[in-house]
View (tube, rainbow, N blue to C red):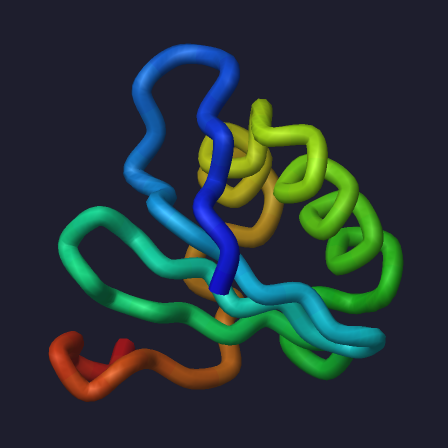
Length: 80
């Protein structure tokens, strides 16, 4: 995972890992959510990866567009 720059305001996101067809988001509480083409579609996935790399706007985008559409969660969080 690479650190999320958080160039905007406060974000709950601490790090991310982006692959060809997925993005993993790590939150400051240690929870990790996996988003992929199956869970959010390629348009949202592409935008999320762009925002992650730019370091700004990813948390807001997740809240407004994909919310709880993640595929899996880390061990420290209850499944939705």
